[in-house]
Each structure stands twice: as structure tokens, then as C-alpha cells.
Image 1 (cartoon, rainbow, N blue to C red):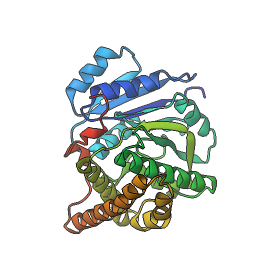
Image 2: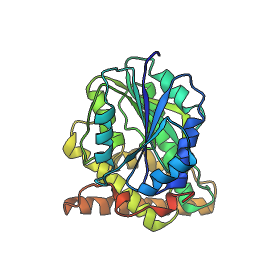
Image 3: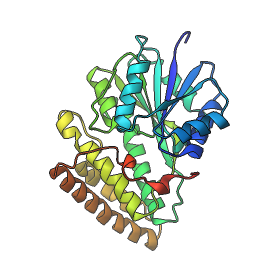
Length: 305
């Protein structure tokens, strides 16, 4: 579409090589329309690395002030806000990379004027032959099925922070104390826009491979979603303790292909229960959601740095 602006925001945290890969995966996309990539990171060395290794005028760097991911994203949203609802904003992370069809599929999906928010399909790059790899496979496969079903039924669902996109010109900001991949789609839903899932648009993700990193990541994620009860009490929830039991318990055990996997899945049940109890306990003690990866690095999710 003529004069449409496409802005791609990559949020990263001291992972220059991984972020370089994320940028290159986007620059290699064969699309007719021009786009601008904005790397958002609180570390100067990431800017230096990107500028030294990628010579492209369509790549900019924004030095994150270090007040949290949501705070930085709100600053960017305000800066690139336009009155043109055909403009597109795409969000992704520095420690993931997208499939070669991603931009074309996303752009084409916004031809439907009723669509306000789009999300892609996270794919775990971890080996299923490891316990944490199996856990990531089960989680990603189940949420894939749920998003696909809800999208086909034109019902609300939360997006994936690894890759989602919105129309520009609709919102300028969102609440800081909730997961952006949940609250932003909800803000669009409230304005009568549809949420769409693109199962063929893949985003490749390295997941935690040890208990400490898994615990830190999942507790932070749960707290971000549980905070929605306070911020948006009428929001239809796709990620909750109740829904995890209802839609995930039987599915998980059905994925076991061996005795070893069966026991790993039993461990997953106890792990998820412990994580929810820990998250609820911290929320009760007023330890509210924050961008945990800025406090405790999830080092095992970094594949190149």
C-alpha cells in the first residue's frame, strides 16, 4: 500500500550477536514495501555491535532508559504514532528470529480492515530429547492449537510477545504493570478489532534449559498475566491456572511417547503447580510484576551471546 509505514521494534537485553541475527532475518525478507527496524536495548555495546556489523539505513537504535520493557515500548509507541491506520507496528525480541515469510504474511493479513492485532507461531528450537525441551514443545504446541481455534472462531486470545503486530493510529500507550502481549490485544479488542493468528508465520525460540532460569521466566510471566485481574477484570483470559488445568493437563500427558517422557511430564505438573503457588504468594506479598529479565538474566535462552 502506497505511503504505508512499517515499523519493527526489536527489544533486546545485552545480547548483541542474537540481536544481529534477529535483524538479519528481517532484512532478508523479500517485500515490496519499505520498513524501519528499531533495536531497543539499554546497553551501548549492543548499539556499537549492530552499527559495526549491519550497514543499513533502515536499522535504527534506541537506547532503552532502563526502566523496564513496557516503559521503553511506550516511549517508542508515542514516538512512532501516526494517524494512518494502514501503518503497521511489529514487535519481536532480540533472542528470537522469524521465518522468511513473516513480513509478507503479516502485511497481507492487515488487508482485512477489521483486524487490529496479529500474532505469529512460536517454535521451540530445543531438543525434545531433553526434559526442558519436551516441556517447551508441549507448551508451544498446545497454545498453537488454542490460538488457531480461537482465531478461526473470531474470539479473543492473548498474543505471543515473541512476535505480534498491531495497526498504528489506534493506541499510543498501554499499562506498564502487565504483559504487553496480553494487554495490547485487549485494548484493540475493546475497540472492536479482531485478533488474528498466523500459524505459518514462525518465530524460533530458545527456551530455558535449567530449573533456575525456567522458574524465573515462568513466575514473572504468570505474575504479568495475573495482574490483568486488576487492570482489565473483564478481559477474557487464555492464560490462567484454571485454563492450564482445563486445556493442558490431559493434553500434556497424551504427548508422552516413552516411559521417560511420561515421568518428565509428571514432573512438569508439579513444576507448574509450584510456579503458580510461588507467583500467587509473591503477588500477595505485593511483589508485583516487573520486567524480570532486567533483574535476573535468563542466560540459557541466549543462543549466541
